[in-house]
Image 1 (cartoon, rainbow, N blue to C red):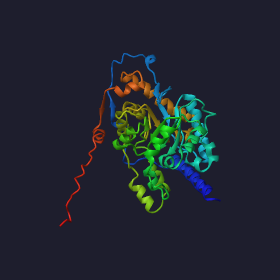
Image 2 (tube, rainbow, N blue to C red):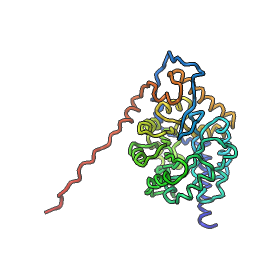
Image 3 (cartoon, rainbow, N blue to C red):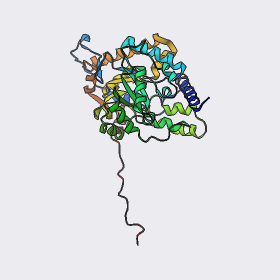
Image 4 (cartoon, helix red, strand yellow):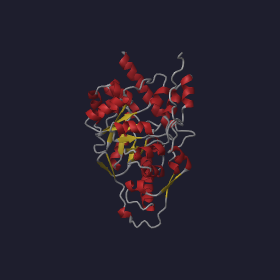
Length: 368
């Protein structure tokens, strides 16, 4: 077996292990929370709305969506991933959800694995996001990335940021230079929009400012408080890397915090990371997200109960949304961002971070 095929085989094995761990193990944050629970919407006793007045639709990247939900990209590049992606895509098609694919890095290594990402025959109309790591984007010409997008028929490309996950992997990436340049290049040269996406650690004001300077339009903040990919890699690790993973298991910025920062910075925001219920999703919309997304709840519902379980999950989210709209006097999900709310103290504390002021470098020492 040549080295490229061997690397592709190891990558496929890792993807399968990721699915197994997420379906069966505790891969969520332990002490960290999303802080979405600290977004409290004020009750409106006189909404002056009829149920027929409510609309659940949103606009994202210039496209009309019937619901403000997205099944966040989670897998691909392994045989088991093919069935998961196709079943979730068919469900998204039936109900008008957006959907992301897992990292298409495996397709770069082995084009035959494209089948594990291809869902357009069962979901011709959904808003579909491709996915590639920022490191791989920096290492690949735009033509190769464009081929990944075209092969799966994606409407946009998520470029994901995952330095924490990579550093826990024994053989993960260790150089993250050139990622911003690659994002900027892809924005200018790809025929579809670019969404910059974190993978469970959230986005800081400094990162958001970098992205704004380069005219990035949309982000998926994927904050801390839900699935921790440092945790997933910890469960695969041994020795020093396992110890390191335990140390950084809860590392990151809570989802509510990153969502608020990103919305205030003017991005079209997908809020994901620990969104586990309809009320979590509603609070994410109130924090400024255009779309609220999740991966683990959909993966586990599919594994545990198939389409009936997925329908139950979606029904809860939809009913909670319509109820919250009425009880806040909001006609649309976008109106939730302007509904009065109370922010809890821990969320308020996070929203006002302290940046140490670096003292001037001393001069003149060591001179005669």
